[in-house]
Length: 507
Image 1 (spheres, rainbow, N blue to C red):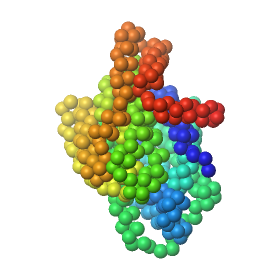
Image 2 (cartoon, rainbow, N blue to C red):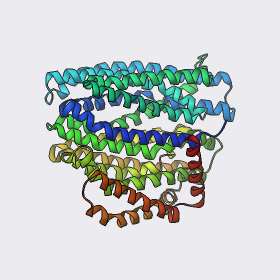
Image 3 (spheres, one colour):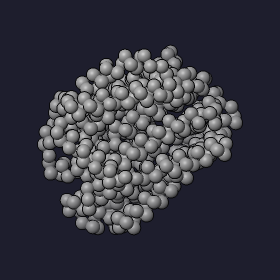
């Protein structure tokens, strides 16, 4: 089988580009179609249901490890592999049931939490939307084990194609939704339908194309303890991720009466989330390699180099987006959703700048997964999540939505940037100073110089779609030329040329 990593990465970026373009195109249309009130209840319910996704418990990682060890390292026999996969899938089913129970409890909490800021009619709509999101979440949890099958077999093309298919179907259905003039409930139903379809395709591929046959024949107590410990760590981490991703909207929905603020802030979070996804794409392709490295007792220097290589490509993207958004973001926000939401520009910058540091090193998370050492990371982030919630609630009361942004930024700084890098150093003997020095070497200076060169033109040009494109292309042109000249090493240039050839073959 050919190495599918490069085409898989390319497909993932095609999906992200498609997702960004469609979100930019669809968001103002949906806001116009629904209005601020119905759009805000849709986004608030989406955020309220978001924490349920934490019940997937990292099942895909467990399945991937089992398959890699059997098929590559030959440490497990067929019976053990089938048993591990069966245990993981059974856990997915159990967690789906738990998610349903949790969802029913949360459903009854909607009126007392949001009753002050929404009418009875909107609350009824919100509860209907919430139930649909719960169903979507269940199928997402069940699909996770099948994702692990594809990654374990290193079928990165299929694994990357599924999100692209999901976004394409969602785009078509939303266009139909807008043309028919349907409401917020039907908008939520679109995500549910697409999630069910992706689940069916992924299950078919795992069972009939990859020939994986989960079979529960015995309960291995040691394996169960190991799996449970890892799953608890993933659960705790998922809580933190959901807090950081959704708490701002949830708190603002409960504390702020002006609905346009939620529209503005959720638009900033959409850009922030897209940025996270854009920079994080490569990290998901390295779990099989990380599993092989840790099994072979790789040294701290080897693990540091393992993180640096993809980290530099991630830094190339991150630096381009941060400086590009700093130059063009204000005009983009004005044209995209309107000048009345211009504060989304400043909120977005507040969020994307600090999160850049953990994003460019997030391949290290695959080392944690390969060694099943997620617990410290999870506990650290849980503590910070609590602080994040407290700070956000207190500061929102005094300074409005800025308080929510400050709480998230502090959580990122203390949890991701400081404590996790101390852990990587102490546990895996990774050279953190070398890590960041090598990742940003040449790339950050090129980004700064490119932005300085483009700044005068950015100030002079007025707000228009044509001028945004001029500024964006000018910045990217200068950035790429300087990057090729001074930012990238010979190996990176060779890989870029190789990936361009792959793209040409795909076309």
